[in-house]
Amino acid sequence: MTTTTTTGSATPEPHPIHAFNQGVIDEFRANQGKVGGPFEGGRLLLITTTGARSGRPHTSPVSYLPDGDRVLIIASAGGSPHHPAWYHNLVAHPVLTVEDGTFTYEARAEILTGEERDHLYARAAEADPGWTAYQRKTTRTIPVVALTRIDAGPPADGVPAAVLLAVHDAFRRELGIVRREFAASGPTLAAQLKVNCLTACDGLHFHHTMEDRGLFPAMAQQHPDLAPALDRLHEEHETIAALLTALRATLDRTDATPADLLPDVDRLIGELEDHLTYEEETLIPLLRATA
Image (cartoon, rainbow, N blue to C red; front, side, top):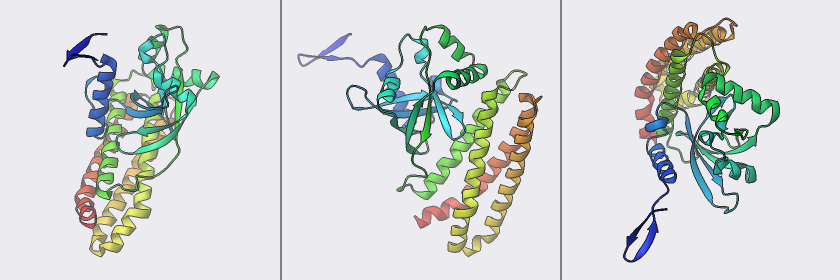
């Protein structure tokens, strides 16, 4: 390792990989999960694990795949002969902290094995041949790890206006990724791409349901003059719900192709973007004033 000398003492230079990861971590935290470089436009998490030997916390940026109520991370290490350190940490200490750019939460890691591991790795590789290339580069079986959230809900000290904006931006980002995946796909609809789309749809439906049951009634009680705007927002939720139903119906077709789905995705994104903009213009100033 090269060193630099200052005031008579030798100080090791940062390891290039560690320095790169720290740069990604800092950018992620400063920009609500958005980063440039090789991770730009992709799905990224920060995971903080407990060192298997040291017991100290270690934070690592990792790519992930949606999988319904959980997310999958793959310990590829670029196809290197050794598992990444975070994997060994999770084997020893399966509870970790996850940052997704919007929320920070505790999760439990499950190392998948056997048929389930093989199925999910093959599903990932069908959508992105890079996973096949990584496995070919190494003799180890690359692990697949499922992360399941332990706690639920936004942070207790979250500022409502900031939380709402962050959630909206997360939906914009994820649907943008899904659209790019459809546009870049071949003639066959990959199973992982279908899961990505369904997970986003389910998350959007849940968010709108919570707004209809919680946020909107609370705002109506505090601001009776908002009734027309809240009625419009609720009607837009119903319009988006109908688009989600149509998209799911297309996804369920055995002959569906990415090209078949693109018009539905584009309609959903267009309606959603207009809805989110109007909701933010209407509610954010009042949420900020209340806070």
